[in-house]
Image 1 (spheres, rainbow, N blue to C red):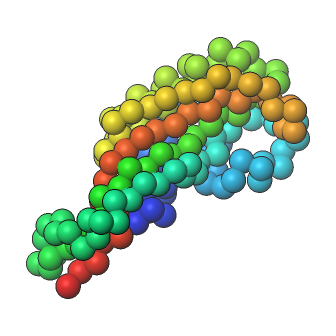
Image 2 (image 1 turned 120 degrees about the vertical axis):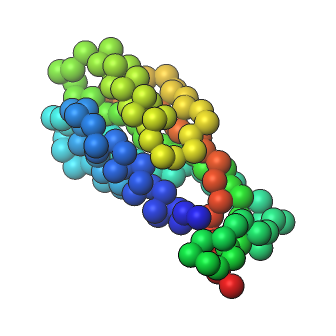
Image 3 (image 1 turned 135 degrees about the vertical axis):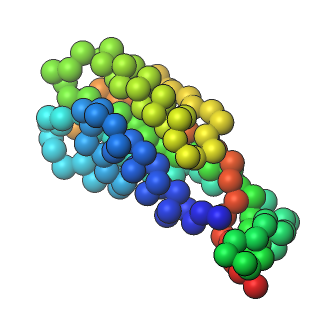
Amino acid sequence: MRSIRRLVNEFVSIIETTDLPLQIQCEFENRLMDVPLSKPFVAVGVKEIKMNLTALGNYAGVKDGREEYSVPAEVVISAPIYLPRDFNGVVAYELATQMVDVVASGSLPIYKATTGEMYFDRTFLCSVLPIHFYLRDRFCGNST
């Protein structure tokens, strides 16, 4: 079972293994301090978590000789791409395609990726392409 923190760290490490020209930060998007933004940037975070708490304590399997129990969950990871003003906005779609390819071939149980409409962020003077990755997994495991 994964913890939510471990899930986000695993997501970031998958993206970091590529040669994508992106800086990656696991922070809130308002923590970007480079104004105007000078390098392509991805701010990874969790947008939504849905846990089926009625299934709390359901058997999940055996790990290291101990029985594990956990909660099934659906998680939405937010990974918007921020592009400096001097980049062509189409670059965001190229980076998104590569990022989806890398994440989909990684070890996370991703079943869907979506993008929103690209917009201009006046705070950081950059283009932003919102991307969300959807996965189902089990969390909050406890051993007995």
